[in-house]
Image (cartoon, rainbow, N blue to C red; front, side, top):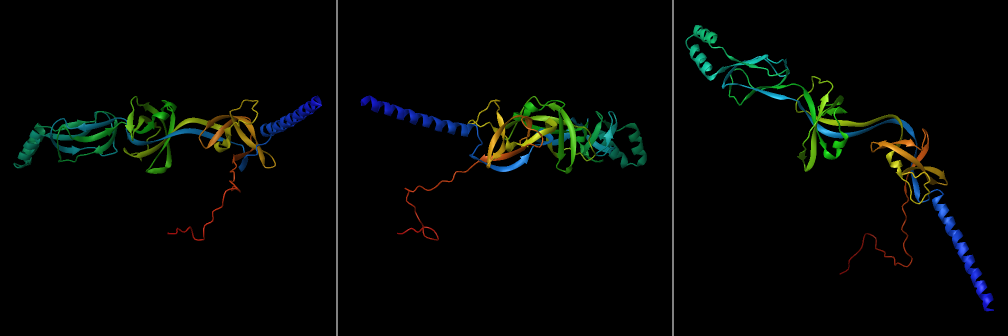
Length: 336
């Protein structure tokens, strides 16, 4: 009798274990091989082709590449200025003429004796010329005829060419290279887009608002007459430029779900409708991304339908064992 009871108990345990194993296998394959049921569809879309541009943005200022101040070689008085702001000049061109303090005093004394005396001194004592030290553009005219200057006063300021000097965060410096293409807009002319290339990358950083930044010079392809030194610019450095590639919104790309078989060992996935309002992951390989859109290099074709998903919010039901507190209309009352 004891043997018969033990045998029955053993068969019963085997049946229970078998049923339990079948139950867990069904649960495993339903969660790993079937559509996800814990996700809800936000919106549906189709994979499209387009252009993708990866960029780094920075602010900048228009300023001269070489800014040269033309100062008086001697203290004295400016007799005439031969150029105006915006004029193009060449090296060695006479920009202004001035009298030394002695010549100015002699001419003033001669004027009290008549024109003949003035002409005689002007012929004998010539004014000193101020010459352009390089080819460029006059960007500042700071004096007028009759004004007295010292050797420390700039009479004129020249610029050989205007560039855009931008400040790039050190975390983005690795993406910038000499000769790299860039585009920029000026705050003064927001409807116009200008192009150029990186001409110089500073070797020493500057501290701006407790952030290490590097000065990057962008040389414009053309310098239109509207450019002025000191203008504020918004610069876009072009890191990657991909044309006619498959694109999906970045919000549709997720990491491969850990509870789903991954025979292709994919890192990323997108979801597709699976029927019954459920979804399943599709393995993909990604390329470049600008943050808003992501390039897909493998796993999808043009026109493929995918969905943007998110996890369902679980509703928190009240416990039947927890006492329910009700408050009177109009808010709670505190009794004293």
